[in-house]
Structures are given as structure tokens and as C-alpha cells.
Amino acid sequence: MSNVGIVIVSHSPLVAEGTADMVRQMVGDEVPLAWCGGNGHGGLGTNVEAIMGAIDKAWSEAGVAILVDLGGAETNSEMAVEMIGEPRSHKIIVCNAPIVEGAVMAATEASGGASLREVVATAHELSPS
Amino acid sequence: MLQLSNERSFDTAGGMETGNAGDMAALNLARLIAAAADTIAAHAEELTALDQAIGDGDHGLNMKRGFEAVRAEAEAFSAKPLPDALKAIGTKLVMTVGGASGPLFGTLFLALGKEISAAPNRANLTAAFGKAIEAVAARGKSQIGQKTLLDVLQPVHDALLQGKTALEIADIADAAAEATVPMKALRGRASFLGDRSIGHMDAGARSTALLVRTIVETLEGQP
Image (cartoon, rainbow over all chains, first blue to last red; front, side, top):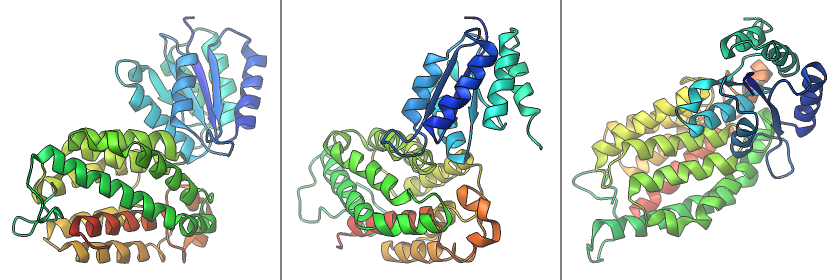
């Protein structure tokens, strides 16, 4: 797949899966997509290992955009990118955008063959700052 | 082993044969890991209560899970040279603690492992610790004064730099954690509360102070 991949990381597996459902409804299978949520022990939270797995699953040579919910999801996602290491880490960006709207907009952009930079810019347009 | 001053060693191996440095490091690291895991387990409920006040209430449980995971592999970690052992501990904490604390405490140990020498003296330890604090600040996009673990790490670094004794360092860490009480949280879940975060101690600052005291007291050979 040459389109940019999308990874959804929420503290809640229900939020992550629901967001992924909404993305699929928009773009079908045209975009590599993976989600993860929960602390790996049945509770709310995020988990670096699960995020690394989701990045692998949604991997595209065009890159991967990650959408996150609260702070820990962002910190853990950045940690996961660092642990994946170079050269792939250069093609993974954690977006600053609301998770649901960001994922749907980014995936829609990605489904048209946009570059990672364009996909991330589309998500970032949703953020106030 | 770690010597925090040139005159006075923190090495507790006192009457033991000096042996080779690797063996001694292994012996002491295993003891440090066990002491740290004991401390976190003993204070897990307190840490969770602090986090419930202004966070998501999982800090004690998360830290306990992480340090028990490190304890489970203490033997293997202790067999490694100190830099590799610290990196392995950091990776284990990243993978097991979760929350925002996993990457933050994990990064502290990972960066310390990257910077420290296999047989550090106080100067090397202090320099490595300074670099590790920078890495934690970058990971959390945070600064001193924002009611985080940095507010304990930085005073501890300053104390190391100023040649304070082990027990002075432990007291400085405790006082620094206390000093987060009147601060307003600007990072993490507590920042959502704004002014309501004032009046509560930061859980990450408290766990950092607990770990600092445990580490220096273990190195000093005190209970």
C-alpha cells in the first residue's frame, strides 16, 4: 500500500476501535489502519508495546500518522516512535489534533494519495493553536 | 561501584574482597533494584491516592507493576555492565509502567544508561544525571516549576553538584516533593484542573523522592 497509514491511540479501546470504525466508513481499505487502547492489563491507559504493534500493522513506506487522545497517549506514542528507531522513525508523526476528527480527516486525505506532510497538516488544521 | 565522593565511597561492600568491578556492580545493582521495588510497593497506595486527587489515579499501581517487572529480571540486569543495565531497566519501565510515567521514568534510566560510565565517580554520575534530566524534560515537554518529577530531579542534581552528602540529598528530594504542593500543574492530567491542582503533592515528584532516598540510603548501607 502506497498511501500513508493511520494509527489511532486512545486510553480507551472502545474509543480507539470506534474511531477506527468511523475511519473505515470514510475510506474503506484504501488506507492502512490500526488502533490500540488500554493499558494492556484491562484498564484505561496506553501501552508502548501495543503502539509499536499498531505502527507495524499500519506501516506504509509513505509513512504513518498517529492520532492520540490525552497526554499519556502522546508521550507513549513518541516513546514508541523513538524505540522503533531510524530509519522508520523519520516517517512517523504524532499529530496534534482531536482524535476522532483528526483520524477521519487525516485518513480521507491519505486515501487520495497525499504525502505524510499533507496528511499531518490536514489533521493539524483542526487544532486551535 | 558508585562513588559519590572521592573521599567517601557509597560502596557498601566494606569488608568484602574488592574482586573485579563487574561483580561488585552486579551485587549492588541487584540490591538497589530490590530496595527500589520494595519502596514502590510499600508506597503504592499512597502514590495512587496522590494521583487520584489531581490525576487519573493509576500512578501507584503503574509504578508497582513496572518495578516488580524490573525486580523479576534483576539478576539478568545486574549481570550487565552498568550502562547496559540502566538501559535495560529503562526499557522495561517504558514497556510495563504505562501512563505518562512509563516513558518519563523509562527515559530517565535510558538516558542515564547512555551517559554514565561503567564505573562512575561522582562527577560522571552528576553529569550523566544532568543529561538524563534534560531527556525527561524533552520527553514530557516540561520545565522546572510545572509540578512534575523534574521539580525533584533538578534539586537532586544541584545537590550532587554541590557535594551534598547522601542523606542531605535524600532530605532535599523530600523537601522538593513537598514544594510541589503549592505549585499549579502545567503538564499532564493535573493541568486540566488548573488552580484546583494547587494544594496537592505531585505523585511523580513523590515517587521520585522515594526512589532517591531509597537509592542513596541503600548505597550508604542504611536501612
